[in-house]
Length: 88
Ligand SMILES: [Zn+2]
Image (spheres, rainbow, N blue to C red):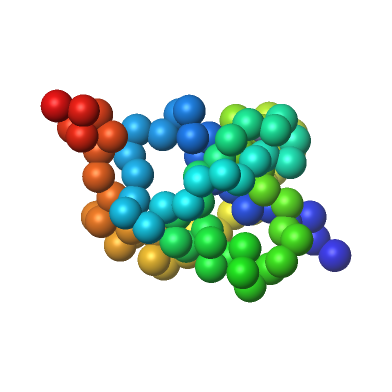
């Protein structure tokens, strides 16, 4: 069986968020807080127990990595908004 992980951003490193983003997830490797956009929430629903991995830990995995980006990520990017603008 393949070693599959769901990769998402650390909450601390996010500069954009999505109206339906969910917080309160943690990286299985480093324990940092993570946030899942709806596409990530769907993958978690469809693959219960999949290991969560933040982008920093993902970068540190040695060797070639295969990854797939769900189609809806492109739509989520359009729907997401800049954190920094909310503060103004
Ligand atoms: Zn991590």
